[in-house]
Amino acid sequence: MYQVTQSTLLIDAPIIAVRRDSVTMPGGNTANREVVEHFGAAAVVAFDGSRIALVNQYRHPLGQRLWELPAGLLDVAGESALEAARRELHEEAGLRAGTWAMLLDVAVSPGISDEVTRVFLATDLSEVERPEAHDEEADMKLAWVPLSEAKEMVLRGEIINSVAIAGIFAATEATRPADTPFELRPQALARRRRGSGTDLA
Image (cartoon, rainbow, N blue to C red; front, side, top):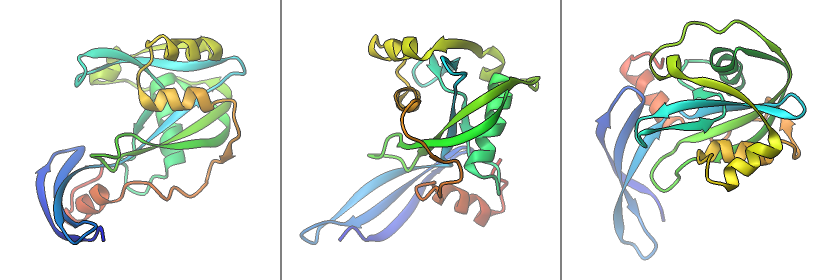
């Protein structure tokens, strides 16, 4: 059961694709399931021992600014999730970390998408110059928030980003090595881009 018998590409956009799979179900029926293909992402809990770095960014689908962790797509060919996390921490927060650990993987919306975000813990922080930002990132604001206050912000409904919520509550829990294999990293969209000769970035 749950075998794909047919797959049709419906949308092929720069950072997502949408396909329709025909899937065999228990009992022998076949049902169509739409899947949003995504590159996956890396996010960072940058923790100085008492505070974490949060970014406030406009998110067009919701039409409002959200408090989030520094994060970004895994859309650079050959780049590991850890390398992406280092890049995003530099670009969005102007920070470098001396110590990295893996916190958890978050399946963002598994009912419709293969998107999974790996969340890292970054410590031993130092400031570095941020590169020039564009689009929404040019309007991004950075704030240092006590971890206890960030948890309260979640419970008050002021932080609603699922990856941020998971990272905030996992920040002081057990970690895994930063290079832990990323078995759930999405592959379909990256394969599609490589197959078409289109750059991932």
